[in-house]
Length: 324
Image 1 (tube, rainbow, N blue to C red):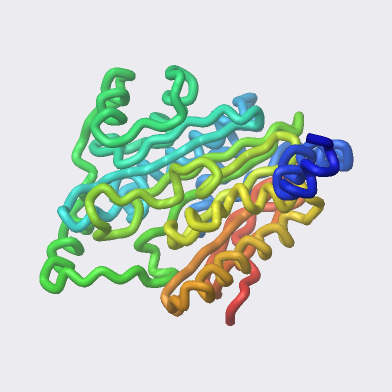
Image 2 (cartoon, one colour):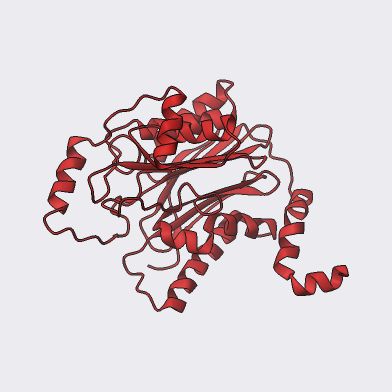
C-alpha cells in the first residue's frame, strides 16, 4: 500500500506512528533539578518524600515508589493502601501500576493483604516477563517476593462499611474522597520521565471491580519522548476514553500539557452526552508533564487539587475545570 493511501485510510495510526518522534525533535531539553506532580492534597507529603529521595541520589522510579508508599502506609489516608475503604463484602482490595520512560511497566489488580501495591507493581515490572498480575496470583507473587501479609481494614473503615450495610446503597459522589487515587508523575535532571499510581478503588464497590488506576493507558501513561499523565476520579469513565494515553497523544501532536488535559476531559464529557448519562455526581481529573518540564491539570468540575514540587515550589493548586 502506498504511503499516502495508507495515511488516508488510517490517519489516526499515522499520528501515532509519527507523533512521538515529531515531539521529540521539537522539545527543548529539560534543565531543572527534577519535578514531581501528584494528585490531591496528600501529594504534598508524597512529593516531599520523592523530592528528598531524588536529590539524595536515588533514581526517579525509586523516588516515585517511595512517595506513593508514604501515602499507602498512612492509615489516615482512606482511599489508598493501609486504611483503604473496603468493597461491599468488607474486603480491602488494592490496585497500582508504575511505568518508566522506556515503556517498562508493572501492575497489580485486586491485591489483598499487602499494604504497598506500588512496590509489588514495580516487582512485576522488574522480576517477571508480564505487565499485570491480578487477585490471588498477585498476592502469591507478593508473598514470594517477601512482602508481608496483614489486615488492611482499619477500625474507621470497618465502622463505615458496617454503617453502609444498613442501606447498601452504592453511589459514587464527586470529591468526597471515597475513590481518590494517588497518581504521581515526575522528571529527573537528565530529562527521564516516570509515573505511578495506587488506590483502594471506590468504597463499597462490587468485589472484583477494577478501575483505571492499574491500567496502562487509562490511569497512567508515560512516553519518554513526549510526556507523562495520570488520572483520578471515576475510573470507568477514564477507561472508556483511554484517558492518560489520550493526554500523552495530545502532547505528541503539539498540545501543551494543559491543553491536552483539557481535551481529554472534554472527551469524557462528550462520551457522557452521547450516552445520555447524568454526570452531576462524577469527577475526573488529569495531571500531565512533558519532557520540557511543562505541566498541566484539568478536571470535569471544581474540587480537584494537585501538588507540585521542584527546586522552587512546593504548592497545592486547584485545577482548572470544565464545569463550575
